[in-house]
Image 1: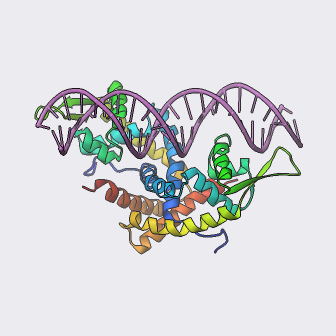
Image 2: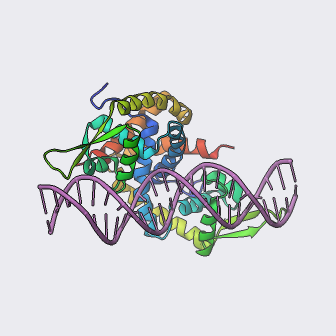
Image 3: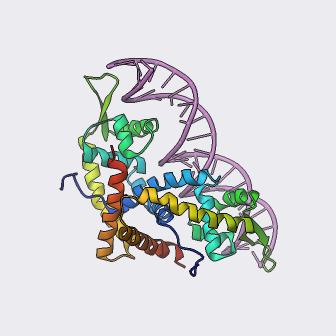
Length: 145
Length: 145
DNA sequence: TATTGTTATACTCTATAACTATA
DNA sequence: TATAGTTATAGAGTATAACAATA
């Protein structure tokens, strides 16, 4: 019942801001010929090391069926490779190639600059606070299990 | 060079968390036969009152071409109506119907409960801080102009 | 000529059903 | 029978080109 009718919930704001962020984020990645899904996979592999597709999909929070095409495209770019798991011939271990590792590191630097624009309205301490809160949420929702 | 390779930037976390939030948010809205785009339009109209489609699209941060189908679907549900603008016959003013207004208010309450689940990892003060930071970002990026 | 709204097309993301091969 | 990976399809969100009516 305040000026604007009622207060927007955090969930709405998060989904909404995420969608806006994702847009500029997508444009940034597109300039480097990557989609969000591809980048998230690269980042996750960089953090965790080689993973089976099932576990990888879980961490990226994508259905295991839908990660296949993403991995195909990354493999074609020679950013990842699928290695056979000798102990279980159903499994394939997904790993970053050297080229993939180099790309992730390069993009991390450029992305930091990219964020400046978007986060301008917030001061230094506020950005740190936002980063910390988001990280807490992210880790709880993704690390789980 | 910390444990996990390198630190995730705020932009990445925001896009990522937004995507995760959007997922449960989408499921919640789907239970009430709405998409995210539809809901965002309803919320915006509720805050701002009747708007031309161009300005509405701007506030919702959707391309003006792509809001047409969203408005069509909302009009079919009788949640909004397009009124001719007598002073400029090119324009059509989009307004919430009584039914639409009632729905937005009803969903705002239910959404607040829905968020509990997602925000559980954060304490009361932290949620308030997150809400405040996101609102600042949202308003800067959307109110603009 | 510029602006408001529209139609149509294409790509990404997400969700789902049905399948192959291994265990 | 259960699990790892795959194929194929469909809806929603986003981006873009081309267009009609009006200013």
